[in-house]
Every structure is written in structure tokens, then in C-alpha cells.
Image (cartoon, rainbow, N blue to C red; front, side, top):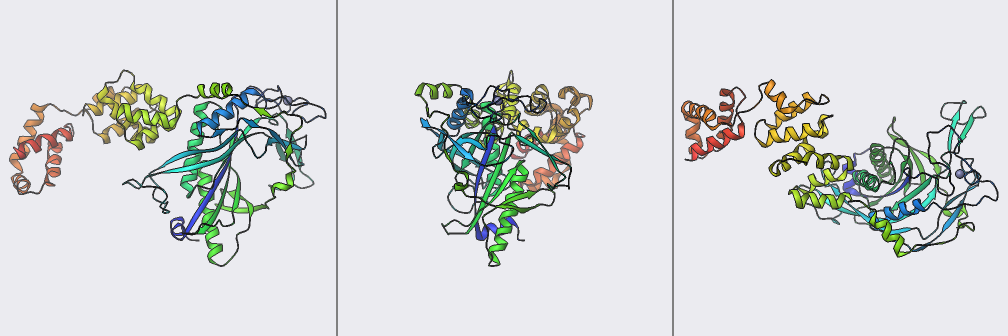
Amino acid sequence: MKKLAEVLRDWEAVIGLEVHTELTTLETKMFCNCRLSHDDPPNTNVCPVCLGMPGALPVPNERAIESIVMAGLATNCQIMRHSMFYRKHYFYPDMAKNFQTTQGPVAFCMHGHLDLEVSGPGAGERPDGTVEKGGDGSYVAPIRILRIHMEEDAAKMVHVGGEEGRITAATESLIDYNRCGTPLIELVTEPDLRTPEEARLFMEKLRQTFLTLGISDCSLESGSMRCDGNVSLRRRGSTEFGTKTEMKNINSFKSLHDALEYEICRQAEVLEEGGIVYQETRHWEPSRKRTVVMRVKETADDYRLFPDPDLAPFDLTDEFVERCRSRIPELPDAKRDRYMADYGLKRADAAQLAGDPSVASFFEEALEGADAKVVPTVANVMVNLVPSVGELTVAQVRGIAVLLAEDAVTFAQAREVAGAISGTGEDPAAYVDAHGMRQSTDEGALGAIVDEVLGRCTDQVQQYRDGNKKVLGFLVGQCMKAAKGSGNPKAFNKMLAERLEG
Ligand SMILES: [Zn+2]
């Protein structure tokens, strides 16, 4: 198969996502008072409502409605004042009442959008001209959200015995109804994503937004956040949609990226060989790095969707919506803008720090009591050092930033120090002194070295004066060598330039 970059030169990938998020932070289920916990012994959090007993009447969880309205406001959706619940019929033991309660054509939240900041690897892969690129190839891609609707989760099924990976007559299927009736919100995007990287970034941004709202623990690993992706191809310049395939229940950002990448390349190969892409559901096999057919897709008609007669329509008041709005904390985009305005950070750095609530609070804690001059250095350490170093405390990050701001260490040394004190709680300044790493910026001591080097390297000095400014690097190196690594290269650079220009 061709590589992704090559495929995307001829073909445009049209990607949409459906994201299911369990509202795990609520105390009770969607339509009954059962405790919301998946960790309890199986089938202990159940009642006639979530077991689908005839005659049991559902009562909607108001907190769940608040959560979905907050999710809608945070993703720039229109909050629909009038909507209702529908029944989606299917037969499977994981939903004892034989229908799932969900929403119909009008969801609580409709027509929103999230803007993606695309930079780093993968940036510049969007050659359709719909977005303006910055000088570094980074761009902002607006992704429209079709809807966010409310529904309930099904029970968890475990199959034991029988043949590996297949259900046979010897298989026993166990059902845990603790999960049945868990409030679930489903977000559906418009097909606005164009690369696997954009899809991955969208999921990350959505996860960060929901985490900030505190409506879910958003764990892809444990399944409280799950994602289906669909993708089709069309020739560049074409506006018609191709036939899409869908990939179900992807449980990591990497799987989402890799599954889409594989599927785009697979479809391109099929189409270029004159074949047909079938509308089907495919399953991603991470171990074999390929997608395989699960089933040919059913149509909406198969579900016999109709309004649930047991649940009255909703009419949300302005007061209710405003109450939800007032509960929304500062979101990543607003935080990014504040970091840019208050600390003068670059957009990409500010977005990276503001994006993850735990990183943002760590950053803000590290700034407490720090001198204003140190702020950009703290941001630099957070963006360029912390992700590759592991366990550093707030005090250690602040300490490293102070050393850098004082030119007591180079960035390479800061990286070395960070690696050495990671997980130990050791003070970076104490480490630097104990290992003789502190660089002198003392003008007198360094000045003597500079004069010695200039007196010795007369050829290079002449070259510099003849216009070869690159030779400065050589002279800095000579000073560093003479200082046995304890002189600050920035200070040497400055002093050399002053003497040579003077
Ligand atoms: Zn219940």
C-alpha cells in the first residue's frame, strides 16, 4: 500500500467521528436512583427500571441534563429548548427492555464547533486551501459538531469458555447490569476532519474540554470515552462524497490515528485498482495493524425509532441554561488566550499548557511566587523539558527555571539536571552546586578568559573583522573549553561580540 502522505496528494480523506462519553462523575443512573459505579460486585446496582421490568417508570436525572447542556455550551452548540427522548429498538441481552432510550432528530445540543490547532508532526497535511497556514505550517481547522444527544449505556457482557475469540455453543455469556442505564452523551461531528492527526487532536481537545467541565473521567482505556470513526475518500477537487466505512469502539488516541491511516490507504488502493468501497463496519486490530470487516451496516429504519411515551418532552428554561453556563470553569481556549495576554507566550506554547487541565494547574502553581522575569522560562521548561523528563515537582520546575533565567546553566544542562533529580525531590540548585555545574556569569573571571582567547586566536579574530561572523561560534567554544565548562556560553557570546565590535 502507498504511504498516507502520498495518498493524500491525490485523494481527500473525509472523516467524521462519533464519540460516546459516560457521565461517570454523577452519583446515579440516567433514569433510576441506582448507584453509578462499575467497580461494585456484578448486578448489585440494579432496580426494576434499569432491568427493564414491565411497568417500571423512568425518571430523568436532572444532573445528567445539566452535564450535557454544559458540554453543548462548551462546544459552541445551540441549546435546543424543546426536545424529547425516543426509543431505539433492538434485541440483545445487554438491554433488558429491548430498546435504548436515546434522542430523536432534535438533540439537547445542535450545531456547534471546536477549532483545532494543528502544529508539529502532521501539520501541513491539509492541502485543500480551506484554512490559512502559518509560516511554520501550523493551522487552525474549524470542526463543526452536528449534535450532542443524551442516551443510556447498555449492560456489560463477558463471554467465557468456547473457542478463543469466537462465540460457540460452549460459550457462557455473563451480564453485569451495573453499567446498564449509565448516562451517556454521544457527540457527532460533521465530516470536517481531513487527516488522522486532526481526528486525534479533535479527540484530545474534546477529552480536555469534558475533563475541565468535570462531567466524566474520560478514560479511553476503561471505556468511559469511546470513539467510532468513519472515513471516505474523494478525488482532490471533487465535492461529492465517496462511500464511507466505519470503525467501532476505538480505545486509544493512537488506535484512532492508526486505524484511520490504514483505512485511508486501503480505500485508496481499492479505488485505484478500480474496485468498490462497501459501506460496512470494520474492526481495527492493533496487533496486526489492519482493519477487518465486522458487519454490513444496518440502516436507521431497522431500529423503529419513535418518541418514548413514558418520558415527557423537555422544555428547558433560560434560567436552567444560564445556571449551567455559570458552572462552566475557564475552558482551554480561554486559558490559552489568557496565557498569551498575561505572560506573552506563543500561541502554540500557550495552547499546549492550557490544553490539559492538570498541566495548566501545575504551570500556574509553578508560577506562584516566581519573579515575572522567570515566567517565560517556566513556560519553556514546561513545554520543552517536562514532557520528556518524568517526575518533577512544582518546586523543581520553578528551581530549574530560575537557574536558566539566571544563566547559571545551559538548556542542555537543565535537561541533564532534570533527568537526574526526576523522582527524587532533590533541589536543582543544590544538585548543580554539588556537581560543579554552575556556570559563572562573573564579568571579571569570564573577561580574563575572553581576553586570553582573543589574544591567542588572532587568525579567527581577523576573519571576524573581515566579515565572517560565524567564527564567533568557534571563539565561544574556545572560551568554554578554557573555562572547563563552567562559563556561560551566552555570557561569553555577549562579551566576545562586544570586544570584537568595539
Ligand atoms: Zn436502576
